[in-house]
Image (tube, rainbow, N blue to C red; front, side, top):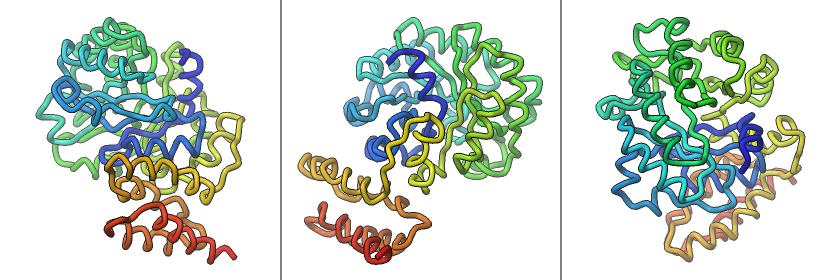
Length: 331
């Protein structure tokens, strides 16, 4: 994929979310939007190097454009992991400088890296030497007692000097002491104005914003303020039809005009293939529970899937039976 096309895809992206944005989720989301940029769950560099690569990195070609998010703080490890990931065909390698979990802190990566922009620059430079695909950074506006208006410009300046020109900025601080990862997604106040200010200070950088974006109206409003991209997390997962089915028309000017029921039918061959390869129905359908959120029959859809996907021999018919609840309510 060309840099221009990847930049365009980044106008709207689905955030990397642990335990959520696996390959099955991304395949579903791709059926709903041709153009949005999709991100993997964060995978640590040591896991890529030493773990089951096909399980960690494998994806369906239909998922393009797709970016891998790496966690780590060792330049040599990150370079090797990036090289492996590029060989798998990822369109972008993203370095996580935003996750606030204790496990991530203890490994000296994630949001704690906001305290060491020189190390982030070294890590990114090592990855860029190792791969031809773009290397990007997802960060916070600061951590703990840092003053975002002071440290964020310095962070962007130092890391961009290493060659990174695309940042996704979660417009909240991360409190590494005193707040849980869940609380860090909601409690620290959002500062969209600061991220917009960064675009004015660094007009040559591609700056996307993340945090609290719940609708396409929210995303478009931020794009209209001059930012290059909007990244949506939980809303894209829990209400994917509201976000992704309209995204191509509204954000990219090229709509598919699909509806949630059509997406269900398009998922059936994928589900069948997954089952033939030894997978379980629930591994796919857990990402489909929100397809009809806010629409007639949504409760029956969710209930039928939740109660039946784990039965012996559960397959596509369970999904079709769940869809019948929606059809009956819509009639």
